[in-house]
Amino acid sequence: MKNNIKKGNPIELLAPAGDLEKMKIAFAFGADAVYFGLPDFSLRARINKFDSQAIEEAAKYCREKNKKFYMTFNIYAHNSHLEKLSKQLDFVKKIKPDALIISDPGILNVVKREIPEMEIHLSTQANVTNFEAAQFWFEQGIRRVILAREVGLDEIREIKEKIPELELEYFVHGAMCMSYSGRCILSKWMTNRSANLGDCAQPCRWKYHIENQKTFERGGHLRVVDDQNRFEMDVEEDQNGTYFFNSYDLNLIEHLEALVEAGVDSFKIEGRAKSVYYVAIATRAYRKVLDAIIEDGSKNEIKKIIREQKLELDKLSNRGYWTGFLLGDEPPHLFDKASLEASDLFIGISWDQEENKKRNVFAHNFFNLNEEVEIISPEKNIFAKILKINLPEEGEKDSAHGGMERVYEVEFDKKIDGLFLMRKVVKKD
Image (cartoon, rainbow, N blue to C red; front, side, top):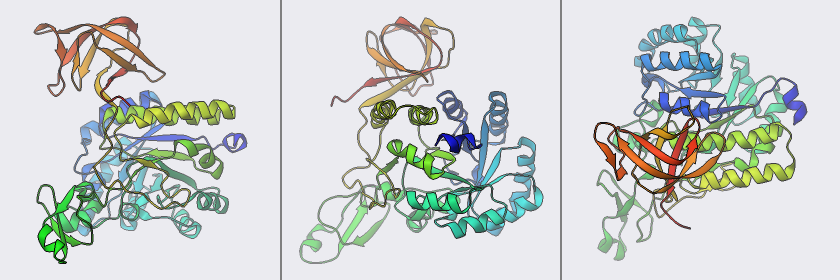
């Protein structure tokens, strides 16, 4: 592993950036690079908060921090998209991303023609699952392949051995799709919103119940409908309401060392649509474990850090964790609910840098006077008690509340240094 790193293969931690705030948090909590896209060509079109102005600001910030950013152009394009592509590529030339993430061969051809110097990464949507496919794309000028989630550990190792010059990127954390590498037709079929054009309605996450209980009990077809009556269908199921498409989330925090040894160059966290809190906790967890591996820490030290960071990841809202297809396991599903209840509640963020007992806190959720809260910095967690809550335009308060875009002056019982997030326990084990 040490030799692999010394040969010029630095290990990259790649985090999601759904907006500028998440991007900055990702870098603060340990990301080497981020990925985001413009709505018209990204598979997160509906929730993408990046417009051209925001991307210009993001690009400038990345250059100042000496960090990389990759832009997603990973839809499967129709002719109408190609008509807009040249204009978008003029913008790409201006901001100079470190790479474009592409899945469609037509978009790839246009980019190679109009920006021949651009580094191109092949999206996981292209479903590379074998070394011949990887070799094919490498010969088309692809610098990095983002492997399909269905690729197992031995297959990763073999692909790297066959094509050592090709960089490999692999998803290590985040949502899993019940369809093949996200190429799902459910959303288009049920809501006319295409997942493959960045507008997935996530019907796999909806709750369903039986519509025709009495008919079913008499031996008829079972008909289910979602809880908001958006869609109904006939299925073979029993009488219990079910989230029968709802895949567990991916969590490979315990397998990073094996992935490094197999030849993975970039470790990718899913979640452009998730919260700034999720980005911080997930990025920091993988950063700490990767650092211990790269620095050749002892096995006991690495195991200790993994245990600590597993507990942090468990505090995030999730659908249950599993190891994806890495070890050849069958995918489990969370049948009885949309997600598992998180034990902790994200309540605020402070961007101040100066060490002080009084800090400006943007409230994301409610917190109260005299309450003990957990302070989460890029390095560590500490507990602090809230002594005062002040709203500059209104005076002292007994509590603070999220959802109103308010920044409170909060006094703690100890000095706190630098950027931090704030959370509190809401569910006891």
